[in-house]
Length: 284
Length: 349
Image (cartoon, rainbow over all chains, first blue to last red; front, side, top):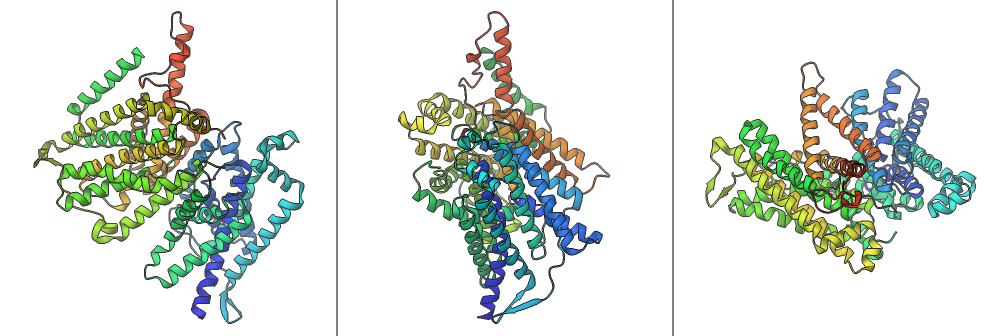
């Protein structure tokens, strides 16, 4: 039983991080209608940069913050390339973000080499109702909870957050009332970058990152995000947790631990099949 | 139109004579370029007409290669195995495409990416069938009724086989586009709703184009398996799918010239990068790094500057040139060698 709970707790922690990546997808897609293929890149860049800063002697909290800020800047940069030019259709933007992802491999290898990178996690563990959990797990869950709370407040209470939602529900009307849709799109990319960066900083101590880890991070995040049809952050959170726990159970109990990554892939296709059955053909 | 015809004839004759001048190593590149053209011709249909981006053409290439390799090793005549490869690949595509194509374009890119990862992981797991991660070795050479290519002219034989298949593929696409379903597809590319309103079976056409594109990739994969006589999951990385996409984007959705120009340019670029990257004194990961950098940059720049690709851009340049010269053709005549004006790929939503 305690093994089971241990597996579940590790699944919840990684699932929470997936949910952060997923929310990055959702925020960007809601505002710009672009599925950002470079979403996993933010996590890789933040994880690698954080490890490099720690090696340089920066204290722990500061290194993470700098790495996340860099990921926000990266998000803004990707947005500038992908939607900065007026009239770029979403399909072209998608291919551009794919190009950015491939380009990032070269940059990451140039800066930090092509080997796996990691750094030390929060030491020690804590006993919660008979389950021993690593502090790192607690940290991930807490950080995710705080982030989701902040996002909810931001989207529901602030003017800018409401403007972002307006761009999603009707871009033309949003433009009519004076909202700069393009600027909101760039803001969404920056937020997406920050969320990806946060996930990267939290996950890297558990799973070392390589230059091409972005594919698996993005696949997991995307699988979580399409739970809510790429539109609702709340369902993305649920999706992330379900996915994380399912993967942890597969790797904990199955003889084929390598099947773990298959869970997200099968989930993606499965959810799509389900959604295709529910929605009329070609519906938004 | 006449210019396009002569250009096409020149390219066909030129590429037919070219293998006579090439050494074995160069013939290998010739074969690979031809196979890429076949894959990209299929991808172009999907991208240009259905407005769908597939990152899984590498997966269909792999399925075709594994089908041909496995069947041939189990005693099926190699030619039959090669012909079965596209058929089986198209069948897989129908099963995958049936649900996924019903969703909007952005989903297909991720779904096909996921699909390729699943295919690679299956190929790596089922050791008895696929040889696992070490791969499938000893695929017999291609023979017709027991007669194969003579060993010393083997690459030469595959070069001409590839030429024939490439020509057939391009011819098929050319005729398809000019046919009634082709007109339906062109209507579909501009507006799905309008096409449906005019009686075009949108869902069925999209699925058929998806399956046809997969069949092209499967056929090319089958030739690949026989030509190299060895395949492994590592032969079909995600980067391969991205390479096909780059070729497609660079060439543009022009029916015949897009895939040809895109594949030739990108393949030669890849060879140049390989040569630069493996110069003495370059770090070990330099070739891969250069490839990533250039593919990424090319993809970004072509999408920003020439989103319709090189061939359509050249065509409109030629057309506007003719318009200025007295007695020239009107810009509407810019259909070019494909004989069919192809709408831009991107559907605005």
